[in-house]
Amino acid sequence: MHANRWHRYVSRLWLGGVFLFFYMPLMFLVVFSFNSTRQDSQFTGFSLRWYQALGQDTRLVEGFLLSLNVALLSATLATVLATLAAYALIRFGAFKGRSLFNAMLSSPLVMPEVIIGLSLLLLFVGMERWVGWPGRGATTIVLGHALLGMAYATVVIQSRLKEMDRSIEEAALDLGCRPYQVFFLVTLPNISQALVAAWLLTFTLSFDDVVISEFLSGPGVTTLPQVIFSYARRGVNPSIYAAATLLMAVVSLAVVFYGVHTSRKMRREAYRPLD
Amino acid sequence: MRRGRLMVMGVPWFWLLLFFAVPFFILLRISVTDMGEQLNPFAPLVDVQAGHFSLRLKFSHYVSLFLDPDSGWGQTLYIESYLLSLRYAFLTTCLCLFFGYPFAYFLARSPSNIRPLLLLLVMLPFWTSFLLRVYAWKGLLADAGLINNLMLAVGLINEPLQLLYNDVSMLVGMTYVYLPFMVLPLYANLVKLDLRLLEAAQDLGATPWKTFWLVTVPMSRAGIVAGSILVFIPCLGEFVIPSLLGGAENIMIGRVVWDEMFSSNNWPRASALSIVLILGVVIPLAWFNQRLARKVEEESS
Image (cartoon, rainbow over all chains, first blue to last red; front, side, top):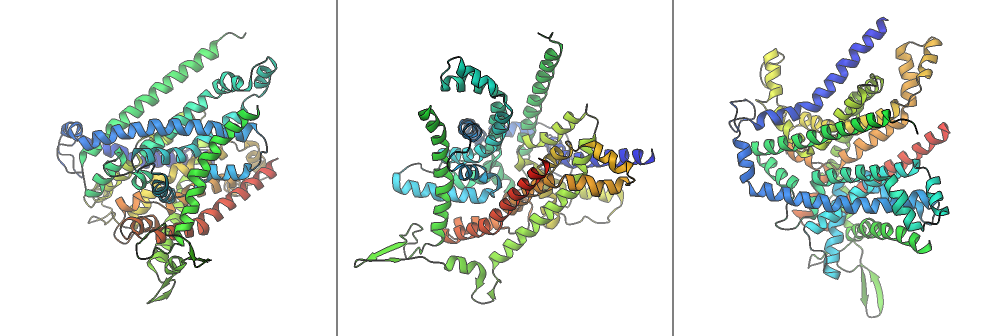
């Protein structure tokens, strides 16, 4: 009994301590985004001036729009590629070169980002010499992010495909569906949740990435994290705190919305009469 | 069927070869290129003169990583920053394991009705910019920052401690960023642990402490290794944290590669640095991880 109570104390203390560690910087960002002066050690009074400054900062706004575009494109590209790759890995059995395929696919997961950035930069410089495409800029960033995102997306999609019931695909084939019809009408709808999860994951990876973008961006092309990175190296800029707070607000809202949606759905399903 | 299969396979194959395999070979190729007078990183490797071929490979980029003409073998800045990076990666992994293991353990044992909420709270910071979270530590750890002020107020210290731009800020920043990468695989592993094993150990007279070390920890070996690798490797090449929270002497290998590439314009040396990192650390670790995963799989089946 004694050991049990002790266990509970330590458990709460440890969980609380680590959560405090996780959330302290976030709270700091929120609080100081409303500070009335540039100071980041003392709260001198409430103001919204940094939020006003945010809207007028064209570099931040342009960076945000570019990041949004890059993330949309690279997440879509990565998810499509990852779906094909995961399908090949799970459904095609032991094809020729499977282990090489698998190794190349998962390598970006264990490769320092600096090396991915550098080797892709060398490739793009080489390609530009030989075929004149692509010049460094938004395109190269999208390709780089898609390479990284594909590795993560494949893990997500692969695990869903593995547990999917194969017999419904076979049933569709027996009933006369062509293989591509089975893929689009049976397989894809069945793994749609994993596809959404993979897309969201790669979207955030891209939206957050700074290292690969730093290597692959060209003159005049800067994503939001790159703008923030250059501000951050120069010193304190509470506009960044304001940007962070807005971002957190959006994410929390999305999470709450998603949570309410899924719990409602689960409740609906729980009460559905058995058929 | 045949054609569909070819298309499904062909697209990712082409993509991976073009954007993963080819860049690796270009990296290898440039690392042995003699740039010559024109400083051309794509200078030809093969010379054709008067009908016979000769190879023009230059390995001095590799040699110069390890040999300093003045102070001898192993005394270069490159070796220093490799060792520094390994040190930070190792210390961060230890810290993440120390704080993350009990955290994941208690998380896995928490009441199942609040567990999804707690997990969500672990992942939520992931969704806000990593850069901004690191940046916030700059304010928290400053001389007049919140942490120093708190410790002063409590009376723990009499004057502000230097917490920023040194080992403290580096390790805090890296642990902060990579702790979830340790917690999530550990949690996934610990939550599957068969509780009957723990009961059995206790019935056989083991103390809770002994049960923990002799049953729980060995059973979660795969999670420990997976988490450690997920923390260790990205830490090794970390680029953002040292430039925001590190001091002038905290130059890690990622920064050195960047400087060689963009400040010194020495592409071959930047490539050689990356190749050494891949061959020396990344591949051995990945291999070790795969072997262990296979072993664990065999044991469980």
